[in-house]
Length: 147
Image 1 (cartoon, rainbow, N blue to C red):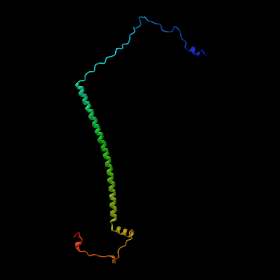
Image 2: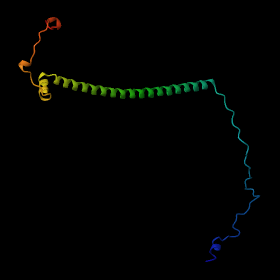
Image 3: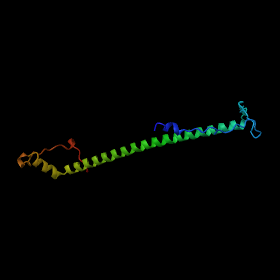
Image 4: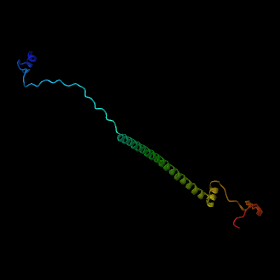
């Protein structure tokens, strides 16, 4: 058991490749060329390229401004529509309250209803004939309609 690590790596002497140093079939060794590559000189831009670049920049700017205006207008329109809906709901609620008050007033202006409230809630009764006092007024003290 103790010999196991030593027997694992058996070296065979004479197994290396022979050296063919001066063989005619061997390619001559070339040293790599380490000279830096030169960049080509930048070409000057023509006027057409510069004009085309300026046109594209202006078009992009116009497109961006147009999109910004569209989003701005759309959002303000959305906000105004929400406000309009709220105002319309308030108007409907107010109109409903006005209608209910008008119906209540119309119901309470009925002479029979007034007599009923006076008798039931206020404990009033109709005056007796000796309690009624008639006044005679001159015609100048009041206005006559439909004559």
